[in-house]
Length: 489
Image 1: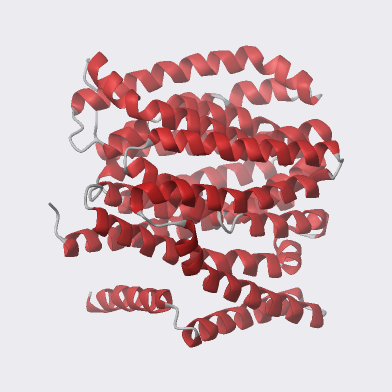
Image 2: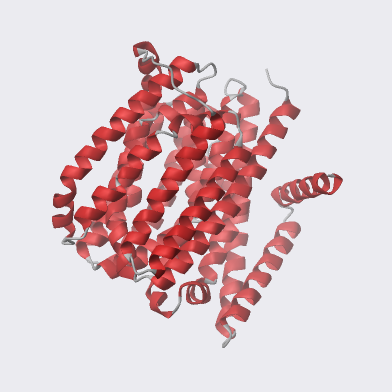
């Protein structure tokens, strides 16, 4: 059994590099997105938004839950990896063929003739991604996020520069398509070359059954979650204009830079680490509890702060033509606050091997979201109503997920609520003050935003210190440790 110091060192090292990946990779992608938003029209982003649900569902189907199964498998061997590789590759080709043939129907559904060619070209990325599934799983299993950070950063820079060049040359929506394809290709190539893994000429039925026995429930859960994550693109693209979908698409991506990407960063580090102590009940609970509190401490104030500075931020970053996306962005930022906590609840069920409960939760939570979305459409509440449905559903999911996951880690909803409520209230208090400051300052948008951010950070740290929030000391200690090591070098 791995000793505590080694596990802690492994986790912290993974988090440092994973956060570095987040800051570097997402920072570059964000910068590229800003440049492209200024060069292109909202309608261009709307066209891509119409396709996203099909690409996202296809990538989930290709993975089929095998990645998580391999990471959790303590003694995965070459036969296991090769079996999954060949399965993923065959499925990716089949899905591409289906999308190629379905492209005209998708185009007619949205009433956009351009979608035929866009779907057929963008779907090639599904096949390209399949080549990198195993190397990525191996790096994640090793908690080696240093290499992943370098690969992701390189692919973001190269594909981003390529896309900007195409946009300047007048390629419009195709600059977005080719940006995604080039990123897929560069990532797959670098992951494969760096890992130096080659599949053996073997396909084991027993390996497939064992891994799929755990993974199929995650597959169904992932498909459900992916569909509902992207169903807004489907509804808005069908019911409203491409421009409105463009506003929603960029608002969604802008808000997800912190919520979903930071959550994914935490999960990809903690999942393999927590899996290694899955049978040590007390240690697992305490680690899970600490991670949940730390995630909330980092994400809650950032999401509320982003909503508070929404208007000057959007105007500075995207320009006047994107002003209609401000309210979408603010509401989506609030909706994304609880996403990392919900993801951690589901992750702990994977760690404990309860993919059946994982699937059960996905079905229950998405049924509630279906009802809320139906009401929003039926009552003609528009895009704001659809986002409001998402916000309400996150709170429903919080209590349902906590109630179910407590069976595995003895961390009930009320105990979790007691841990998170102080951070939640402090974050909203800080956000309210920052927003009010912005309302009093007119003129220079940059000065207004800097003043809001500075005040928000000061208020949050000061109140957390007065309230004796333990995570403040944890973050301070981690930063001190990192800086000390850097200075020693």
